[in-house]
Image (cartoon, rainbow, N blue to C red; front, side, top):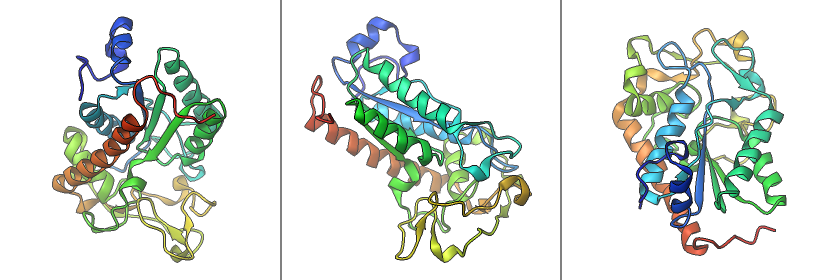
Length: 269
C-alpha cells in the first residue's frame, strides 16, 4: 500500500524519495506518446492512458512512479502523420536506459516499464540492454497483457477505436468529443488472416503486428486518423478495461515484491 504522500517522483523531495525506497524499491516508468487519435480524442491519449494506469497501480502496490515519458517511439507507418511527435528508435532506447540507470543511484532495484503505445521496437531492446548490465526490468504494453479477445470489447483493438476511446471516456472525458467519433480504417499490405492485432491472442499462422512492414503509411491512407470502431466506445467499457489491466499488473508487481524483498537484487547478471 502507498505510504508516501504523493505518487510521483517529481512531486517529492530527495529525502522523501530516500525514505520511500526503504519501503519499496520497485519503480514504474510509464511511457506514452504524442500521436493523433482521430477527430474526437486528444493527441496525448497514449500519455494520459499511461499516467492513469500507473497512478492506479502505484496506489495499490506502493511502487514509485518515475516521471511520465510523454514522447514515444513510433512504428514506421505512424511517421509523417500530422499531430504525431515521434522520437527516433535510438533516442527512445537511450532515454529508457538512462532513466532506469539513474533511478538505481537512489536505491531502486526493480523496474517496470508500462507502455500505453505500440513501441515494442524500443522497449524490448532496452530491457535486454539493461539486463546485460544487471538491471531487473520488466515491460508490458497494457493491451497485450490484457488480451481482451472481445470479452469486454466488441471489436479488436487497433487505434483511436473502441478500446482507446473507451479508456479516454473513463479517465479523461473532458478531452473527448464523441460527436466527432467515426469508424474508419485501412487495409494492411498482407491479408488480415496473417496478422495478430494488438491485445489479441495470436492464432496459428499469424505474425505479430510489429514483425514486419505490413501497414500502409498512415499519412497517405487515413483520412480521419481512426482505425477501428470509435463509435462503439463507452465509459463502462473503459472502466472494465482499466480495472482489469491494473489488477493484472499489480499482481505481477506484488509477486516481484514477494520473491525479492526490499534490498534484494534479482540475479539477472
